[in-house]
Length: 310
Image (cartoon, rainbow, N blue to C red; front, side):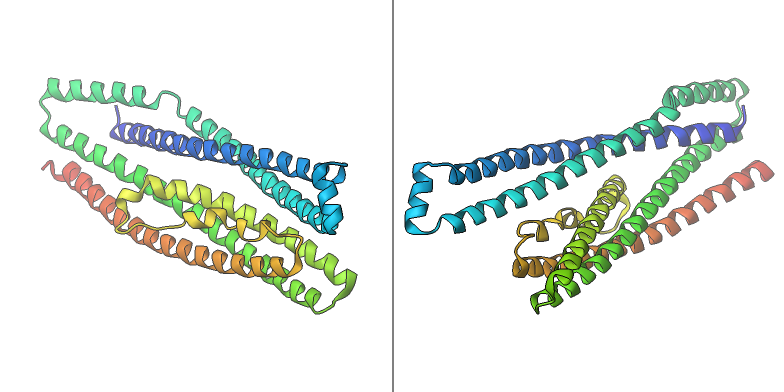
């Protein structure tokens, strides 16, 4: 049995274990998102009932008619329906995206089959061979192979986290650009830009909303990767606050001055999240260099042992 085969099988086993941990983490995220979706679905139904109550001939409706506040109250309730519907839609999309992520992850896990059992069988075969032949050099090579497998698996994990972080950073850049554009058109609209300016502004807000949602999905992936390798980072990297950045402009999407304020807040949150993501990427790059160097040292030890026998 070749040593390379043992190294590769151990690496497969460790990778499968990592993906299984990530799967469990995302399952917990999905539970939270599903609870949020249920909350906003219930809230939406309640807000709709409030609107219907004001439109019907109820005592409350009669009271608001008498005091002259019926139209104002009805408009307020309609705005709350829109806000609840937007948040429910966002939560539903997040649930669907997370389920898709889990399905893809499950496919990757299944490709490795019974990696742990296969590695254990190979390792026992190698161990029996070394015991029977009393090969001290072989035992040392087995130890180095085990270390090499772990380093390669960790490097794969770090590189996957780097890719996730780069995706998140790019998505945040798109969100920042979309929010800047929405903010600019919103400013023109408030200065009296007319119907066309208003239509463009709301189109830009839709674009910004989509961009922020994409960045949230990328950040969820990046957060899961960081959590799994957190024990290797010298300091904690916080990016979780960015996962709800969309809330900064969903609440009052149909009130112009309020939207403008929400867009500004969202811009600040996106920029802060982008800075934190880039800082996390810098730390990961440093970590990758450390592991590459350690991997090189182990490879040199293997090469020396094979050449000299000591």
